[in-house]
Image (cartoon, rainbow, N blue to C red; front, side):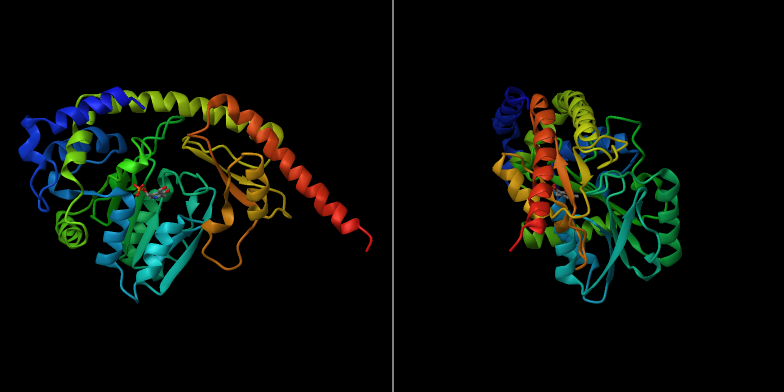
Length: 358
Ligand SMILES: Cc1ncc(COP(=O)(O)O)c(C=O)c1O
């Protein structure tokens, strides 16, 4: 991370020149420079054209989801959720509605069957979380058609929008939406850092007005000083440089982890077609993801058990997520090898336990 550049932006933001910009309470207007940078620098990369009045800055994507849940979801609202999917989003919607509909995810993203009963559908089409699959263009069009036909709203969570570094990124669902049915949610956690707690949403102006009023009741607004620091970081070109560097590093790690998985855990995964920051791995049928997590942790390998991402009671136990964005490149292959050995050892123990005489 370019700490010196970040520090310089923070220093500039704190200067007398910008004092009037951040010292006051500002619930009605987000930092104009940040809005301009989101509109001109970030959104066009996802194919999205928006007006200033269609953008709201939030305390991370999670805050945007909570605002949307408060505005759009009541006890009888049917919310379509990806299965497996982002557990925090599921909890946010489950707090408001008793009608969650779990929509299975296949190799081309969420299933379009069962959408007719939905009022709101939450999706991660570009980098499905956690499986990493990308929804192809034709299916995105079909999802939008279904939204018109059955009159539902789509929340598109593009939480990893700067992690497209393998193939040409597929345009965001929002960019294909002529009807104003898609609400786009973005996060700066992956491209800058999660502790920053800044994200944004793009939606029709009237909804943004409502979300701004709701935001005011919750937190008034995200800290203006942070908004100005990020705005300067973007406008001075540091963000673009960072994203280019991030692409280079992520691509290298993605290739190394993909090869290591292919060598040490063959057939356990398919490489995500856009890149991203993790692999979704399927272990042998007998594998228990929670026990693997504990056994791997003892060897200093951290995995995310897959079962937490399922909403259904009857959930697979043999899947897990392997992130690679924060692992030094040279430690990836040895780590995957050790993980494969851990799985084999668990299998040996299970078999010898079965064969042990009382
Ligand atoms: C799918 C998904 N959506 C949203 C978020 C939340 O993003 P933020 O840190 O901007 O709140 C995450 C965080 O990991 C995520 O994985």
